Length: 248
Image (tube, rainbow, N blue to C red; front, side, top):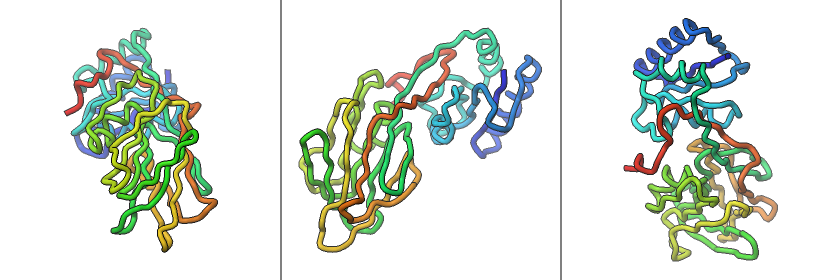
């Protein structure tokens, strides 16, 4: 079995990753540095995981970060984890991803997609789903998967959606209107978000899992659609499933 071991750029994480590589080689695993791996071992926190979880390969998370809510393996359990991996003694947890598509952007998100202010002024826009149209004005909108609902979504509205619920969580970020903080929608919905006429041009950021990937501008043809992706993310669990007790 081919493993790629990646880590957060800290001394501790790099030392843990180096130790895992040595143990894995001794146990007969092949360590690769390219994209021919069968699984990716991620040493770090949730931010490190987000960089690799969307690559379509099974992920193994080793805790070495300030927040490691999505990880179930402690560094001291690395050898036991590798033995379980060799014996196929693990569970696979499947996570839904969000897909974002606009005129200039196409990306997928594990946690969330945000339409966020770029200048120190409010965004004036709309969100469409089914036959509903909601006008909003504020810092923006955050569309989350269920696992993302206890990341940025939790910080925004203090609402947690269990990951086994088939839903999309929409949070209105510091909005003057509408007079609601969040919407919980079925996960078969396709949302369309666009900017409305504010009397002057607007340009806002499209942020996918914390990274700015493009911009949305005031234009009749410029809208972003968000829906559940056909792609899935798979995380291997060796000890415990992630539960909502990780929320602080």
